[in-house]
Length: 317
Ligand code: 8YV
View 1 (cartoon, rainbow, N blue to C red):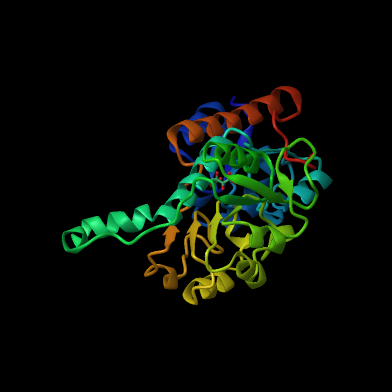
View 2: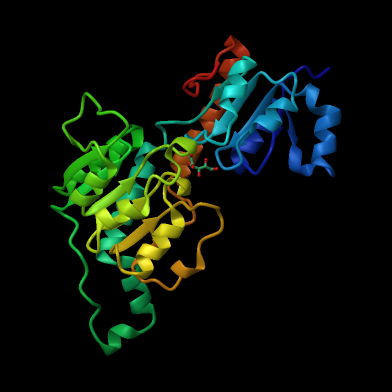
């Protein structure tokens, strides 16, 4: 008799994570069911846990469809797609994977800073087109010694700030509240930070509290010499306002790893040489994705052994 906990997987996962889950638990892939909604209605009560990614999450409706649910293990640091409040009400533990991805996300933020300013991607396209045979690549913008404004000085924001030290950059940040133990200047308003910065790097959490924070007014404060970089969530930026600001030359350029409605990217951006577009790959290295997968497994193992996940989402049970 197989008494191992039953885990529901509600979207694609890293193959080695899926294998580890299948080897350890009774794993069911929701998408493999001919009629997922009917399946949940008939079989929802058998599941003890959910394994999900930040991309799809475990929304309230899914939690409500699983009356025996006890634990959610999320692959990702973002948890805005998880019904954490509902989970708390029901005493369901929620684990996630912070910290193990800080370095790679910060590296990506810096890669985007370098790329938008020095125009490496554009220069690569120039070389491949054979344009070098016809003339020089235009001048770009210096990074070292410039001003880096960080929106959201959390775990990832702090690592970005440290990276900036290696480039002799001045660093300031904006948060809801100033952070105690850092040497960086606090800007009480986002517009103030944008006005000061050469590079405005977004590293805040997603979700309703930060929706549209980077508004047309903030972009105008950043100005025609300023670059925007986003490695958090597309929703933090008013994307329509960003496209317009780029079209009108009201900011210098943008490096984006995230978008409002992934995998949809506004087509207006495709033709712009001062924009770098990444398909949400900031944590996407072998090393970091393995560490995230391990933590997804650890959170489940810890829950089933002790009743607590190893790394709980703040405010969860
Ligand atoms: C992943 C992320 O791409 O951690 C997050 O919140 O956005 C990324 O690390 C995502 O979890 C994969 O679905």
